[in-house]
Length: 604
Image (cartoon, rainbow, N blue to C red; front, side, top):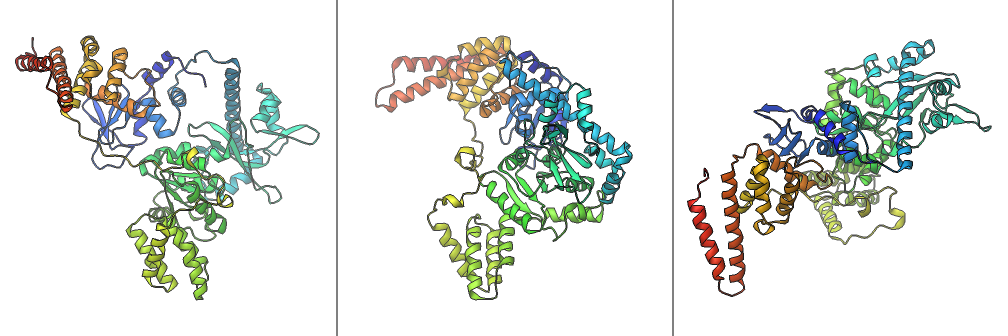
């Protein structure tokens, strides 16, 4: 994607309401010139998250994250910088311009945009046809019979594809789209003779959108038993990738952020039934298989995922595969115990928020088991426990699962449960688990490697835990104070920053911040490299703290003297550490600086 012009980026930023954007993920309250709330990036009980509505900045004084509105959208929606700019431009109706790009890349981008417009038009037609066409009457009856109200169906844009073989073909051509474009959008197929006809006919249509709400493709349910397959999806193409898609993610994101979890189901009607019941943090994987890309997409929004898949063997296997593909991702997987033979759409048919069925399902989600607990219980329920040999085999199967769990009360209780089920001594189970944990890890055989499992190349290693914030030293506080005052008073600050050398500063990050501010003091966050999270967070904090830092030319001069003396003290310490005498020049300079500091008048 070609880069947007800086002027375009600034227009988008000026038009964006950062309070509105952030409020989808946490409740904000006005506190003077700022808005505060609980941080949407880490768990906390006391608000330490601050938003500057004027400068379009955010910063958490608890975990240290920070940046501008683009950075927030990047982090919470899993987008690249350019995608974040584009998403906000679309949301706030701002036209953006791109810098010159390769003609072939520009043509491809325009073609993708045309295909997107074609899919949006087609989706609108299907939705209108469902509610207005006599032919769609049976589809309306079926959906009503599933307990789905007109309101939720319209909210999700559910539609119906006519039975005629060329409805979309003719409509598309009349709108100026070529057969090739209709085919690339996944709306046509060709017969053996090469003649094109509509892919979706006589089916209920579920538009599938990306996280930004753009139609990527369709899922279509058959209306008669002789129609095969029962569900037909758009083909993999320029826009649609099933493995990278979660149905309803565009609607579920705010609820996922506020509830701090995602509920994952199998199908379209399950999602609609749950949203109708008020459980709006729900998405679907459109089948039982869950992919690494889908887990990664969920991980961008939450650290807890509750799987509410069907309780049949396929659903159970899907949950275990989810455990494998989530290995190394910062996601806690839990399982809501569904009744055999029932899916959420059956359980919640016609039920709204506050109904007994909705409350029961929410309680099911609240008490969901951790996936390892579910795994162990599933192994025990499938095992032959009628003989010692069968119980030995069951123990062999559960020990690796138990040993992979961290030491916790949950694991201890599960070990006791296993011992009870196997009629074994709890000490035997604990010893087997301890022995398995101490055994050297063996690399998996080639046949045991699951396709799609994450490895070092695709980010499979777990991220290190966040480290507690280190208290700043007196010197570091003065460094930051000087930079903050320079931001608050740029006309005076630029002169002070130019006199501030790398030797005055105690770390590479502060040197880099000083160098950046010298060149960007009027607008410190314009053009900042968004891929460097730590640097963005540092500069953001300096900008936000500059508002409450008492600033004056005299205070900046005094801080510079303090840093000058700290630099001299460091040089003296280095000289004496090598066994020599302190240089007379440095001692003299140190004395002069101390006198200047003692007699300094900030009002001069």
